[in-house]
Length: 91
Image 1: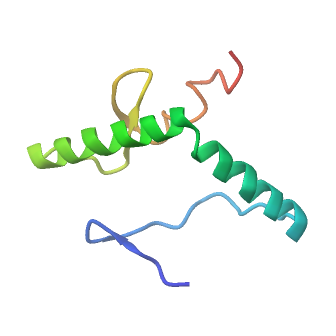
Image 2: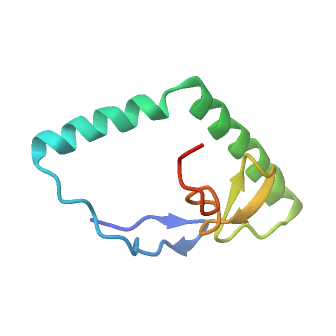
Image 3: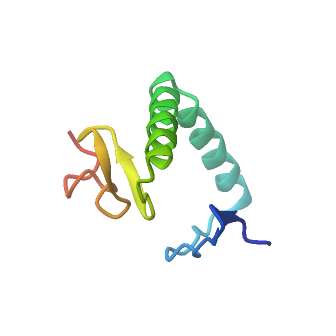
């Protein structure tokens, strides 16, 4: 599989190992993931992220290794934006 370039740079391979699922489980997971990605909340967050990211790039901000955090309202490192800051997914 060819690696795609992002903004002229080679993408790093993911350090996490791919899940080893049966074909039936992988298909079910793909359907669940797609359904989650199509919710109104996810669509709105994705659109907001794209708007802010494009605006920041126009201003010349270096966004290498950063994601927009919708709770903090700013760009933070990818690492810190995962797992809800040590609280996981529980509320």
